[in-house]
Length: 439
Image 1 (cartoon, rainbow, N blue to C red):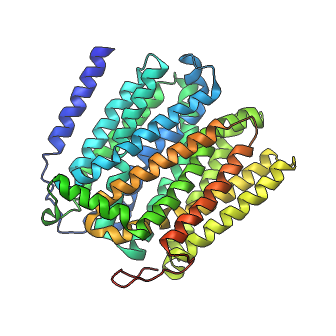
Image 2: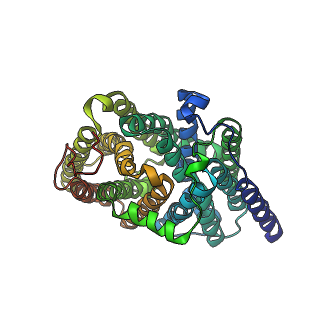
C-alpha cells in the first residue's frame, strides 16, 4: 500500500513539474471562446467545475457504506468525508492563483487535474477512516484548481454582463452534477464496492484533462504574466482583500455556500433518519438540485435585460422569506417530506440566481489581478463555507430544523455582505468616482 501510494504521488509530482514548464502559446492571441467556439468553451468550463462537484455529491449516498466499512459508528462523524474535501479544496486556492499568473492558466490547470486523479486513486485504497480523510484533503487540493482556473479563464475573456452570461450557462451545465452525482454514486455501489466510486472520479478527471490539453487555448497573454515575487503577490492579495465590492460579495457568497453545505452534509441523514425514506434520497435530491440549473438558465436568459443586481438581490430576499416560512412550518409540526422537497427546490432556485451573479460581481473589479483575486476569493468562500456547513451539519438532531435555521441565518448574513458591498443599497450599484460602473 505504501509503495503504491508513493508511486502515485511521485507520478503526480512529476506531471505537475512538467506541465508547469509548458509555454502555452498555441492560441493566446484569441479569446478562448473564439478558439474553440462559444458553446464548447462553456461546456469545458462547466466540465472543469463539475470535477470538483462530483467529488462531493457522489459521496453522499455512499457515506453509510464507507462508515460501515471503516468502522465509523457515529453518523455525524461521517460528514468529515465531505468537510475534509472542501477544506483541501479551499486551502490550495491561495496557491493556484499566483502560479497561474506566472505560468499561465492551462499548465497549472493540467497539473491540478493530475493531482486530483492520483489522490482519487489513493482514496480508493485507504485502509482506515483517517487515511481516507487525508486522501480526501489531498484530493480536494487537486480539485481546487478546477475552481480557481475556470473563473480566471472566463475573466480573462469576458467582463460585465457577458461574463455573467458565460458563468450562468456554465453553471447551468455544471448544476446537472448534483442532479446526477448521487444517482451515479448509488449506481456504482450497487454493482461494485464503494472504492470504485473514486475510480469513476479519476476516469472523469482524466477525460477532462485530455479535453483541456487538446482543445482549450491559453487565455493569459505572455505579456500579462507576473513573476512570483512575494511583495507583488502580497500586493495583489491585498488589493483583492480590500476592494469593497469584491469583499462584500465574497462574504455573501460564503454565507450562502455555507448554508448549502449545511444541507448537503445532513442530506443523507435527513432522508434516512428524519423521514425514514432513504430510498427517496437520490431522486428527491436530484429534483431539488435541478432547480439550480433551471435558475441558471433563467439568469443567463434575462440577466442582460434586468441586470445582475436586480436578479441576485431579489433572489436573496426571496430565499430569506422562504426560509422564514419554512421554519414556521417546521416549528409548528407541519414538516413532511413533500413540504421539505418543495421548499428545498425553491431555495435551490434562489441559490442559482445568486451564485453566478455574486461571483461575477466580486470578480468585476479584479480583471488586472484575476488569478490572485480568484485565489483569495475561492480560499475565503470555500474555507468559511465549509466551516459554516460543518457547524450546521453537526447540529443534526433527527429533524430538518437545523438546516432550515441555517439557511435563514446564512441568508440574513449574506444580505449584510451585499449591503457592505453596495454601501447600504440594494438593487443598484453605488457608484464611486474612479470605479467602473456595472449593472
